[in-house]
Image 1 (cartoon, helix red, strand yellow):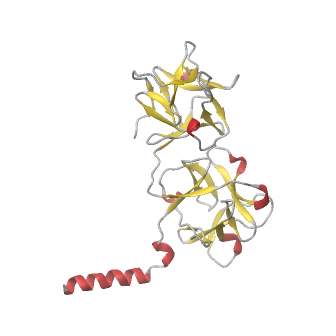
Image 2 (cartoon, one colour; image 1 turned 120 degrees about the vertical axis):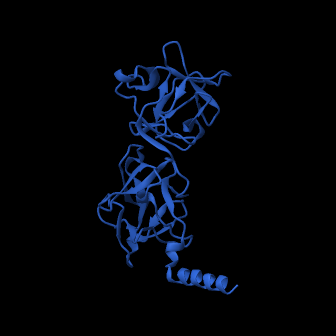
Image 3 (tube, rainbow, N blue to C red; image 1 turned 135 degrees about the vertical axis):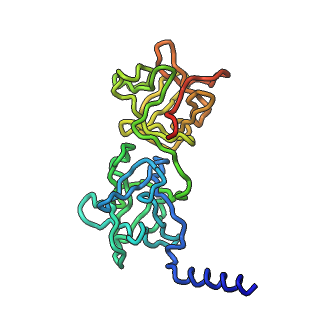
Amino acid sequence: MVLGAASAALVSLADADTPAWRQLPEITLQLSDLPGMCATVRADGIAENRACAGTPDQRFRAPGPDGGVLRYGDFCMAAPDEGNYPELRAVPCGGGGDHYWIVDHKGRLANNVGRCLALMGGASREGGMIFGSRCDDTGQTWRFMPADDVWQSRTEAEIHIGANCLAWQEGGNYLKAAPCASEPHAAFSFAVNRPTQIRARSACVQANIDGSPLSLGDCHDMPSQLWTLSGGHLMNGAGRCALPDADGVLRSQPCPDGAGDVRFPDLP
């Protein structure tokens, strides 16, 4: 009992010596319309948008419901009121309003100098710049997600359909199964362990009405753009599958009973 009490006292002392903010859970910061893409801090301290990978450069501690700093390790994330596109970056923590953030009445992440967090163009491409937009110019919203909610992401990867690959056809904006080596647009970004957007060329694969070809469109967090691999078929959140027609063009159709031949890359 004496040893137990001593151990408890040591733990309590350790907690007392740990700053309160270090006891907060770590989170990732994801644009609401791009689940699976995380704010990522480069070696020079500038934040950009990349596929979530569970790495330390994507881990933050969020401000509370009444606002506060957005911490990255021992630094704070700031976007000053300077110019049109001030980059979100890690800076030494201080009293500046440019790194004091709160979720405002529109669900935006806003700081005390009138800047709201935004992604340049809202594009799904890797490395998109995250900056402080003037709050009257943007409606973008962000989500704080648990950092241990790991996305097994693939970037610039093929999606196999039998002996072929999923490929985007620029003329006509549709997707088809085509020979892997001959198609310049057969690389996509997605996750292999959960429903996922399939991203390419700053856009997302989408399915419209049944029978229509799959296409690339603006990214939104909606069922028609969230795909998973089910029984060898590419199926979206609306329960429709991407099935090739006689010409290999993928169309939104009711899912068949039999197994399909769609494959994601193997896990490392």
